[in-house]
Amino acid sequence: MEIYKVSGNESTPDICLDQNRGIFIFNGRSLPENASSIYLPVITWFDEYIKNPNDETLLDIRFDYINSSSIKQLAKLFVLLENIITKGGKVQVRWHFAAEDPDTKAYGEHLSKLVSYPIVLVSD
Image (cartoon, rainbow, N blue to C red; front, side, top):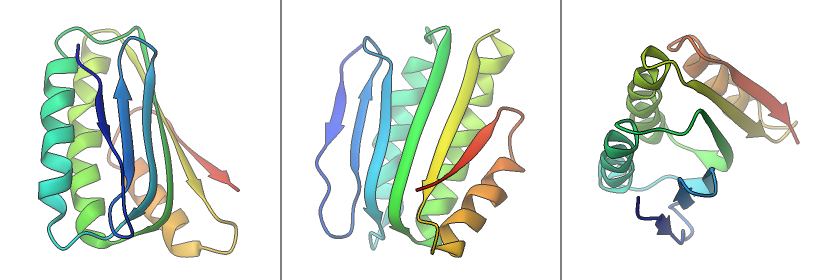
């Protein structure tokens, strides 16, 4: 499967999705005016990935800031990843947040209630 890689800017995250190396990383800030334009290609990529996923899928998410429209898009992605579980695969998300950022931590807690796989909250 092709690698999906996007370099972020002041309002969009760096994203690297590499099935062969098992790298699924979101890093930076996510506050685009149109979050679906950023996350729709990601969701489309994972739609394909789910057809033949790795045995274990670990997403590493580290946002300095994330807005509510980006959270809605990530919620769609996280629910989509449930399909890997139904195929017998494993999914885990490491949700990094700054210790002094209770909002990002709360977003991770909220998302963890939507899925059956672990979302591990990591205070940096």
